[in-house]
Image (cartoon, rainbow, N blue to C red; front, side, top):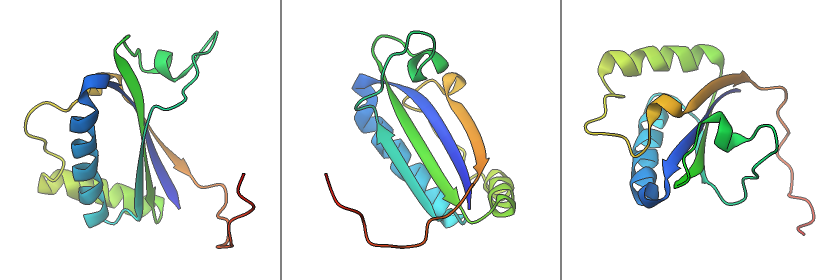
Amino acid sequence: MYLAALVIPVPEENVSAYQDWAKMSAAIFKRYGCLEVQDGWDDLVSRGKHTDMYRAVAAKDNEKIAISIQIWPDRDTFFASEEKMHEDGALDYEGEPPFDPARLIHGCFSSLFDLPDQPAGKQI
């Protein structure tokens, strides 16, 4: 598996617009071979003494942190899909995204391991 991750500062008043943008983006990625997309909205993101997610994206007082994790079959599929999406114009977005794209963090990661499917453990 190959993972693409984004950390995004989003103005609190744009949560609905962000959800729409995230759903649209996830549908595009899945059309081009992404296996799964998970988006999350700031629920318990700690502010650290030295570093934290807010500082990493230079979040403003009215912004919350959103994350997006894309799971791709492998690195080659990710890069081929990225190239194809740009060629096709699939990533062209009309209007302004509901956040400042200059401050988002994007990174790609090779999977360290995959856990086999198994029943969930005891719930707390």
